[in-house]
Length: 532
Ligand code: ME8
Image 1 (cartoon, helix red, strand yellow):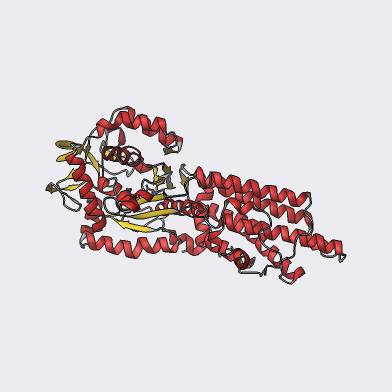
Image 2 (tube, helix red, strand yellow):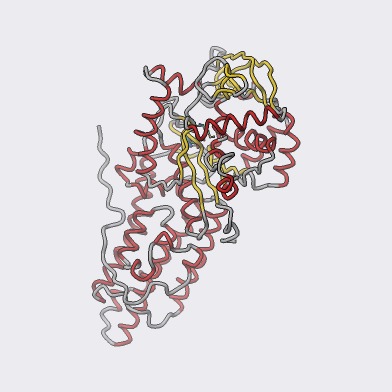
């Protein structure tokens, strides 16, 4: 199924557009890295891919933060985007094709057109609403969404902060009319919401009956003006969801829009599931536009049993970890350690243990041992394999299995953990092969037969590493490139990013004669963490 999406339509992946009320923490990086890995994986399938991220800059949360910092909201957003968000994505090697900001004119103009169009189609009417509102979520809450503090104060269950009672005369989108159509759609597309628990939650929610959705605000002005009534601004979530359309040419570049929209995968956190799985498809249905292929919700990274959050100041900066473990290990760790879709806690000890055993010992040592032996026994010139026996066939089979599993798990199911495990199982298998074959003993046998055997073992190990570099490249691009260079693969096979994942199991791609050098250590021993 690798190339089914090839052709005119790009495989379109998005992250949420993040609120710029503060700098990014591990949670934001988690979703963005997942998007980047998915993107790179599909690129290495030879598909056309479009990867979008960006920032959500309107609404009360941003406005209040700017006020508290004595600057205009626009100045606040500009500063955060340029000094915190974009530099982090660059630091983490995020290969996004575009970065949309909701204050850009290319976005705001199209948002106005979209909403005007819905108004003209009678999908929007004027009405009143009063209810509890959480500014952290920028969302009116239903009674079931609230928890009670000890003194009886109603709190948002996500932010654990008091909700405010808002009363407004607003414009409403006739969301309630879309319940049956949405349920029919979920039924016909069982893979639309991932994981299963998220799908069940949404289906139950919609089955209870939907209320119309307030889509404007008139008590503050930091937003996109409602085109027919400029005393109102468009509700920040309507504005935000539309980024997925405006960024790829909605109402502006029909060709780009056709070849990109709708998204194949919207990656989100489970906190914003209803917006993406209920409101967003209903908005598109109202316009007769195609709905996305999949909404994949990741779980929460937790700190002390609570969701890590900017609003509650429990965010850990990714840079605090990359400076210690390196960028590649960082990209790998969260996808490896936490089943995608489930909550997980970050722990310094767990990261350290996995880094040492899986990255440094299993993988890094294998790479350096093989390069060292090709250097020592063959002067750095990769020998040809003389004759493949059962042990070599087992390695080739193991590789074929790893490729098939990783491609299905990462490329299709977004089960990053299972995909990574499949690749590392293969790494373990190659380690076992070397331990059993004992090339250092075979090297003592100076007969022609001994030489041939040694050549076969080292060719098999190096060729295995060639495939590992290809498979790990979407996850850990820097160390994969270092391995690629150390195998001298570029000269005969070309750029690493151009290597197709599907055919990476094809045996014998790395040619005999390749120049193998002992490169830098892929995963250096960790320094003792600084105690302060
Ligand atoms: O919700 N664990 O922006 P936001 C895992 N602007 N993921 C986390 C996380 C955590 N502790 N904390 C945040 C918004 N995330 C809106 C989105 S989209 C049209 C508008 C990730 O800055 C996760 O992907 O609050 C979550 O959905 C997103 O950051 C929320 O970022």
